[in-house]
Amino acid sequence: MSTLLAIKIEITWDTINPVQWSGPATRLNVSIILLVLFVAAFMGIIKRKPKPETEATWAGSMALAVLVFAGMMLGYGVVPHEWLTYADTILEWNDDKFLFQHTDNVPTDFTLRALRDIVATVIYVVVLVGNVVMFGMWQKRPTAAALAASQAKAVEGGGSRPGGMSRFGRPITKKA
Image (cartoon, rainbow, N blue to C red; front, side):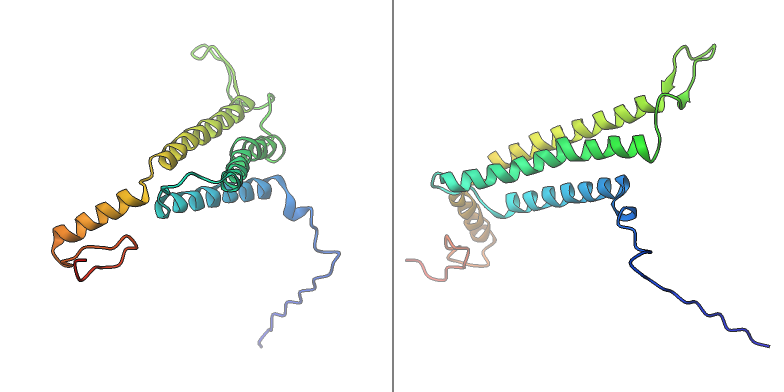
């Protein structure tokens, strides 16, 4: 005797609850992913784009300032807020729950709310250190002329291309 297992799945608009997919943990994860993508894109720009020889335009400076402001809002505002919301609502880390309580050996109480605040402080410190490091990398990126000169030295030193590289990065076969 064989038995068939049949599963019937019905999805209606009543079974899809949008509040279920927009909880604090989802918002925390999305904000962290956005921050990581923002930092990865900024690092890619730093690695690929040399500092131009000309002064920056007003429009370019304002566009970059808006992007930096958006990244700082994510790092300093959204991610810590979503962590605190997640810890308060989902994890229920409050003053009623203790990581450890005072005993004869340990003279202090340590609540989960204190741990929540320590994690938020660590988030702020990590974002601040990353902010300073990225600003330093942005300021220290090489100019286009210095980058071309270092590439030309590398090619001439190797001897694979006798003429070196042009300022556009293509090999030069004849001396001008």
